[in-house]
Length: 444
Figure 1 (cartoon, rainbow, N blue to C red):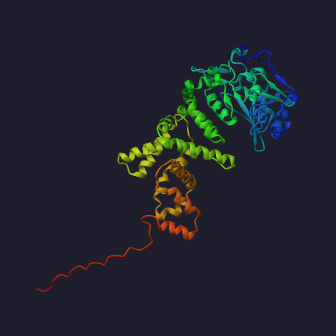
Figure 2 (cartoon, one colour; figure 1 turned 30 degrees about the horizontal axis):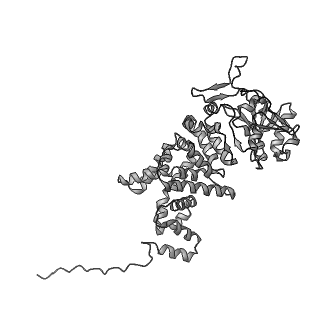
Figure 3 (cartoon, rainbow, N blue to C red; figure 1 turned 90 degrees about the vertical axis):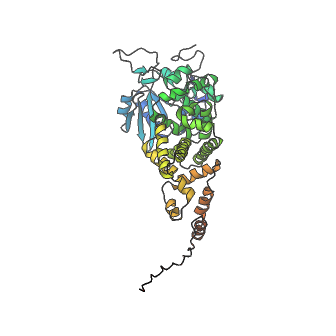
């Protein structure tokens, strides 16, 4: 077997323009400017990743990544509007207008020895996870350091050729997702690759190759060694990109959802209504993305964490806690328990709690709170959440239907809807006549 730093024998690595469908016209002006700027400065620079893969599949690319033999410091000096980011894996973000081009230096093989000064900019942790990865090498080595073959295709604007060291072009034709190198080793180096495998397979409608899929379930819990803050960003990519429903079911299939949301996973598997609740929420989000409507992390996490929040709420009610403080306490407990797995920034946790805490108020529909409720900044999200609960089978006194009718009604119709609510009649109750106090007998 060929080593990861050498192309397999017999593989034609360079595909001329006449033998592929990729065109320079797919490049954004910003990407072209970065590629040309590096080339003019004497560096080798190529387009890589999704910017090459997606057009070959007939998909319009959203992002463009550049790989080069220039070091991060050289890239930064060359482009004024740029900054070096990352410690574990340094890359450079080059800004051009509203667009950001990600530029990375060719990575060296993990098997290369330390540099002349004895320093090793590559380091693995005790579990095999990459802690530091700033050892630079050739394009051939870089190709075999990438995650999947379909992401290791390079496009050279000098002669418009495709460069393929790993068989990525053939895998694209066969719609197969295949990890580069030994799957178990690659997942241990970076467990997030397991998530990316599911995300890419869902997005591209690709099949995981057998060797790529085989180790995932047994090693899913390696994700719990990854920074919870990093996993927050990965979860957003999984579920808010327009293919969240398919991704969710694949995550359940391979045990990855359990690694990220252990409490929710236990509750979901034993409750069909919760399965329907989360599935319908993700279908709705996918539809919104397709329609060009916004989707936000706060609503996503309010759905994913609702099983454990609601369970705690019901338990506190059974223990005699009043409803309002019970829901507030349950909300805080559910979010706090999740933070060690996927860390949710504070700017989102407040919104999550508000969506949950509006639920009983939406069901109760107190007359003097109806119009103020409409003005609440989280009303629309809480209303959508309420509809999901009803659609999954919860009996909520038809509150979702009532709020739907109320929002579409005229002022007169709204007054009638409010008056029809139990205990909200406008009719004055007839007051009982006062009983006069009997006068005392003042006669001697």
